[in-house]
Amino acid sequence: MSAFRMYLRVVSESLRPEQISARLATGPDEATAIGSRRRPQSPPRAHTTWIRHASAGDGPGRPEDLEPVVLGWGPQFAAALGQLAASGDAEVSLVIVQELTDPEDPQQKGIWLSAALLAWLAKAGASLDIDQYTYYGDDQ
Image 1: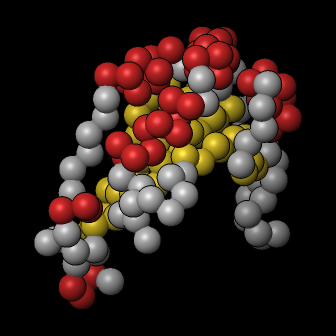
Image 2 (image 1 turned 90 degrees about the vertical axis):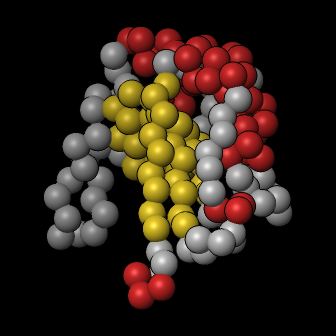
C-alpha cells in the first residue's frame, strides 16, 4: 500500500455529474450528485463531486510516479477543466493524500511536483489540495 493517493476533484453547486462529464467529454471514476445522501438519515448533499483517480498500477504511487498519469490525461482535458473552472460553475482541484505510518521509510516522506504538472494544473484552473495524516505508534 502506498503512502500516497492522488485524484482530480471537480465540485459544483449547480451541475450534475453527467453535465460535468459532458463539458469535459469524459466520465468520472466516481461521482456523487446534488441531493444524494450518504445514508438514508444523512442530509442531502449540497454539491456534486466528480472524481478521476490517478493510479500507478502496481508501482509505489509516490506523487512523482503519479504525475505521468495526470499529464497523460492531456492538454485538451486540462483546457476543458480550465473552461469549466473559469465559468464559475465548478471548482477544480488536484488532491494528494499522504498517510505517514513509518517515520523511517523514505518513500513516505516529501512531495515533489514538476513544473510540467504545475503548468497542467494552471491550464486546468485547478488548486492543489494536500491532505496529510500521521499514524505513528499508538495513533494507529
